[in-house]
Length: 144
Image 1 (cartoon, rainbow, N blue to C red):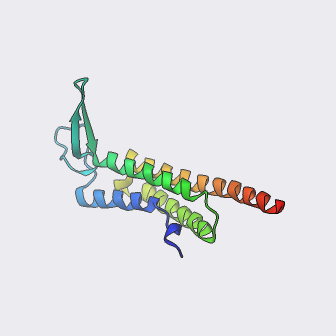
Image 2: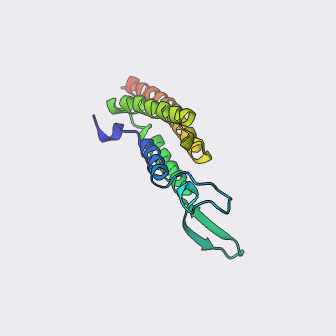
Image 3: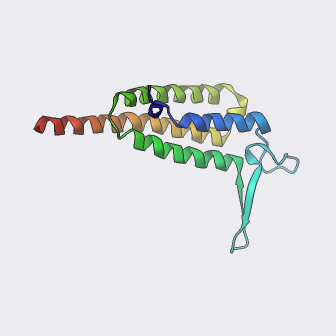
């Protein structure tokens, strides 16, 4: 099995669990909330408008998830035997994320829900793009 067959969104799933396990979920918008968990500040930037942009651990997870989703969609355009394994493993990752979202109270956050949606998009896009690429490859092979 190739390393390309490993679904990259599993790293977002693991990153979320590592951050929540190490720092907790935290509670946004409350005075007594610890500056940790998903809502803990990594850095902030004062903008020209006078506003203050805060980058949190939850934002980092979403940024990583978007980059990994892009990589997964690009991987779906290749046709090989490892692509089928990648699609199957992506489905397993989606099911694992869905089960955790439904069963674990620490996963009941918008950040985790968006990781779940990204995983669903990966599964649907992977199969859809894979079918379209396979049809194109069959059409090109029929001309020769």
